Image 1 (tube, rainbow, N blue to C red):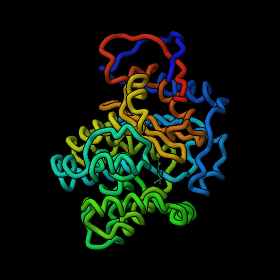
Image 2: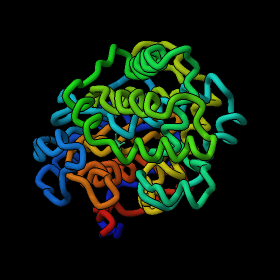
Image 3: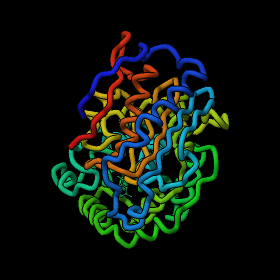
Image 4: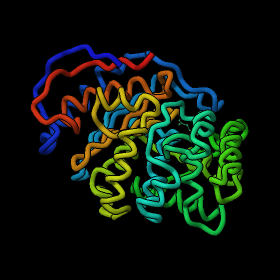
Length: 339
Ligand code: GLN
């Protein structure tokens, strides 16, 4: 990513968000600024995703107070895809604890694409990161349950608590991915060969494919992220979903690996833990303040939404969310996705 400077009023990472009107105004500005941006390509390796309308664009800022700022197509549903990895990880951390998840799944960036098989081989079967497919499959397998049906239901219920409403499966996406996910099946078999997956690998792939096919809206992403920003309490329902320690651990993992092999650039430019998915969603979390959910199906080569990255970068700067900024800091810039 490269930046092109443009001045705006100064904000820093400490403190709190500006008042409701100002946050709303900036959410609208972030949307308007990138609405006509048509860089990137819609993912089609899962066939049904290729049919998404590339014009769709939603931005939703959710504050830890529960206040919401929704602009654009924020009520359009799409499959959560890889963003589910962050929330299933949090649920598993809550159940198994810091050490177990760290040892069994890892907290490092593989530096390789999310569906890399080589990454598994290079690390002798250790998935390294819960945010790539190998680590996400290993994480899903750790959800305590007596059967795959129970595991799936626990994931669906858990992610629904993050969203503050019942999430449902997009059957079309699930069937489309199930028919084509040979690579994920291969990764699960590879983990099995290294003794890294305790259940039937293909059943784990099936539960993972379902979790990726849960339908969410941009607004849901904002609420889910704001729950992590709020120490595990959903700011809309008031329900505690996970502990503050789990939020801290999850956000640390998102900072290092949430944007795949582009996580370093993302952190450098935007300075927020975040997670993206191939259907075009991104959620970025500002601890203690809130979260930004975005949705736009055109992606860069790493699989991150182009408009989502740019709008989030704008809002991170304008709202002073960069967690590394310790003094009033400079420009608002257009972020150029990696080539
Ligand atoms: N379900 C997708 C897969 O396993 C999720 C990938 C993603 O969103 N990056 O390939």
